[in-house]
Image (cartoon, rainbow, N blue to C red):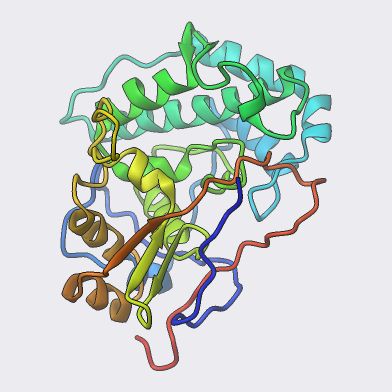
Length: 306
């Protein structure tokens, strides 16, 4: 399937998204209402290093084989498969017990653990499948056991979504597909998990392949991820834990409004678009050596936008 979502009505600039949210000791979990995270981009932030943590081996692999667009050098990664396997074996021996809600560092460490394990296991599954053109050609790619008897779906749904109830987690879990969120180049740590979750969500929401507003034609186009986990999918029963982004179009608009420039945020809050279109998902493998026919543009605010 093919990505869509390019449009007029926005001012687009291609750039790398800078730091945007200062960690403030808040635990992993749904962020408080009333904050526009797009405006937090300019605040300084020193990213935490995974060096010296149990996730350092994964951090080395990601920084070595993932580029700034989230595309993977699977040929190179295959040469380091022993390191990837050793990391997953080690993580299986260090599965954290569910942390008490009052232990904020432990809660963040637990969430970072499962994000890292999910992404590492997904990469390993691609290698095991022989680096296919698309993971949808691999039977049961998301539902067969890949780590400690758990599938990628089980890690996402049970260890992350049901446990933490934080929609931002969707923006850091790789699908190993170009239509999914960008794979991060560094492993996650408890130290700045909250900041990185918000950073990834702003990047996702400000990518016209995933979210685009057409004020002239009064419509918005959204990634199917926002529908898949919204609890509202025409003709199909509600998904388990399926209300991450709300159950109505309005709730999804209000969620999106927190991560985009204020002028567009006000538009979403004050207008009811006549059309809400969910784009097709691009299942092409996120590999570096594939033709880059659909570059990933990022938008910035129009001139004069604070």
